[in-house]
Image 1 (cartoon, rainbow, N blue to C red):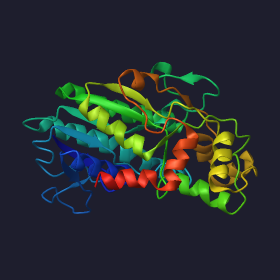
Image 2 (cartoon, rainbow, N blue to C red):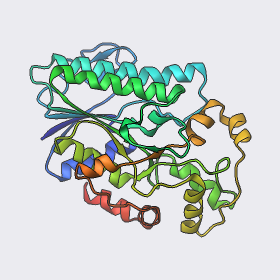
Image 3 (cartoon, rainbow, N blue to C red):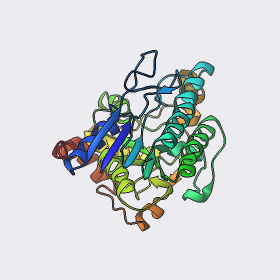
Length: 307
């Protein structure tokens, strides 16, 4: 199988590309460029162009590109960057795939737990509907653009990822630092549900979506749901450091503004039952074994074996 990947240099893209190559597949990365003309190879979503013929002959495309949600305050300008990089970028990609002589059979377009917003203790299956606020609006529109690929006869899968756990990337290193310094602990009251998945299982989920006849949205979060306070306690135990100093919600709001409520304090108790029923099995279903895999090097060994 020949698989095109956008965002191939990111944490998930790098690991997924290695996994696919190790499995005998061919990977065709789509690289962002600042070149002013579409005759150059790659694409420039901000300028609205993609090189002619990109992904021609690909059996599948994985779409991972998009500006980081967790970096910086959600100013008006930053929101525009986040929106354009996902909505305009996905629309550009899908429109391009529709022009190919032989469009790919499947598009796996990354999505996020932010779809659900702040839903308290409600157990969230994929039919729970979108929440309210900037992030749910963004993710709902993002998925909507991806689904337009169905008009070109392309099977579409939108994995809604929880927090992806990796030692060297994503959100985990930012959680680890205060714990190592002895100042870590729950965010706010810590009661919010925090969906999480190891990088190993995130990569395996994308591979599963490519190779199995599934479609639509799937919750990709470990079966063992965790409140933020329980996650931070488990992280402290793993690092053998105290982790009981809470960061007050008001302070988070002062420091990062709206993103505090949209990201750190929002509660999403995601249920991955639909994905499990489709046949997916988790390598790391429980939090204790997930953190052990991440910090023992087991996860890195797995990813190296795919290279």
